[in-house]
Image 1 (cartoon, rainbow, N blue to C red):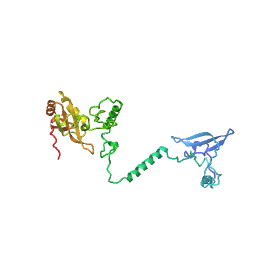
Image 2: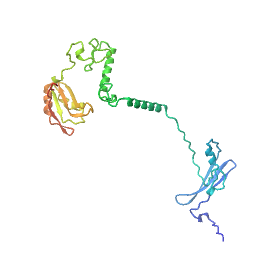
Image 3: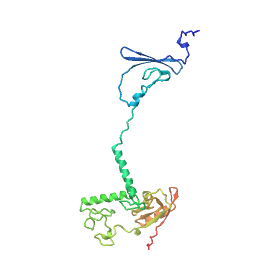
Image 4: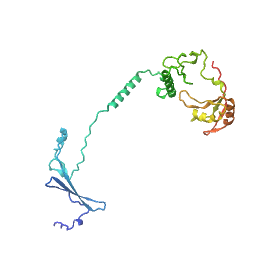
Length: 292
């Protein structure tokens, strides 16, 4: 006994969807009708109109041979090619391996050459800075900016032959024993005779020794602390002592005044002063003992 047909399609199983149909029109447009369930669980009819265009593409021999393989399963016995009812065709992506950029290839070659050159160097050779001849790399030279100022001052001297050397630059004026190109000439080798000094000796200034200083404090911070006391003369210097290798602060520094009264006032006010969670210890700096 055959099952009676239902008069209303809504009485059918809610999960049973009609098959997808395709109809080719006279204008070459294919109408595709499919069904799906919406969020409310109701059947929804989806109609799409597409125009198909045959494209010819050159593929490898293995890809062309795979398209003619015999089908199996639900598509067994069907002609070659994809079937819209059982196959979903996505976008065909083609990947091409592009050659390396010329700049990237040049950088890689330069890096390999640098590594090869470094491998040729002896293992025990120390690193020497090209600027100050220190035991660090040139890119990390702490005196790079100061040396650049000296070079600019030397260039200015070359342009103006009558200009004198700037104060503190370490460059001798022309005609005073300076070498060609504005190179540094020690004061003892200049025209003034041996023993000539550019500055006042450091021991002549009343100097204070500041300890218990924060490791984060630099020269400008130390100068800002003691400069208000320089009322009768200027603050000659304010330097934080640092390690020669790591350039880290050792926790103390020196402050020099031109006037001794200013130094005494700073000693009275700043000894025991709290700065950056530390108590400063300020005392008179003792002269350096002569080295053997």
